[in-house]
Length: 182
Image (cartoon, rainbow, N blue to C red; front, side):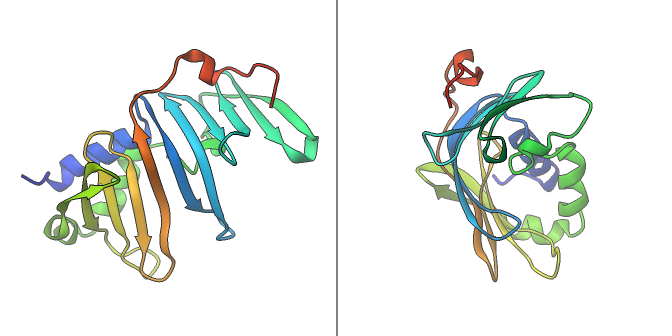
């Protein structure tokens, strides 16, 4: 049985702050450039490689390590838990519950009436048409277990976000530790 819109919002909120997840994330950035990241997340910890195999960012509780080309190497930046995680903004939102409620409850009938179970990359997911935003209705596919938005499609841009090879098996703390090499 399909979840209610409120259950879907709860699932999506969990996906923005996953207990543990890894996979390959492809997305269009603000300049509509295609980006591909290998991502590991566990709670607030994260590791991003761009391209896969090259460390771009490691987020620990109190520090970010970023491979920052203008600095010609890796820089350490303090992480303040009271501020938004701008460095992780492609992956998460500061208040996911408020975000999803503000969008999906604009037209819950459309969301509920289009919600269907589908397969994505070998796993089970939910797909639905989202309420209009900026003149378009996007189609979102959400992992049934993790709550990650596995695929986001815009009628004109096509797929603008997609996860592949998603796993809930995340390596130990060393994955989220900068070892001095980039």
